[in-house]
Length: 152
Image (cartoon, rainbow, N blue to C red; front, top):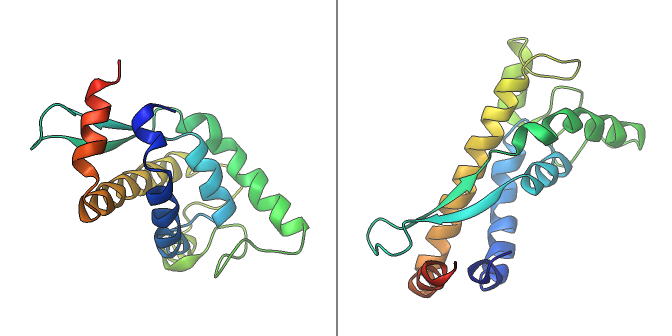
C-alpha cells in the first residue's frame, strides 16, 4: 500500500458502506465482492496534473480470483446462507442477477466467466469514481493527489 492509500483508509471504509447497495444490485454477494476487491488495486492516473488526475481501478488481476467466486457461493450455500441481502441461489442475486438468470446467463457451473469479470471490472471502476468523488467532497483530493505524485 502506497503512502497516498494509507491516507484514505477512513474514506475507503465510508465508500465501502455506501457501495453495499450497488453490490446488492449486482450478481455478486458481499463475500464474492470482498474477494473481487482483493484483486483490485487503485492508482492515481496523472497525479501531477490537477485537472486530469483521477483514481482508476487496476483490474488486471481479476482473472486470478474469478474461479473462486463459485466456491464462495457454494460455501455460503452449505452454511445455510444464500449470500447477503437479496442474494440467493446459484446465479447471484439482485435485479441484475435475476435478469441474467432469466436470460440464462451467468450462474455457477462455468460459462459467463468473461461477463462476470467484465461486471467486476465495471463495479471496481464505479467504486474508484465514488472514492474520488468523496475525497473531493471532503477537500482531501488535492492532498492525496500531491502525495501520489511524490510517490516513486
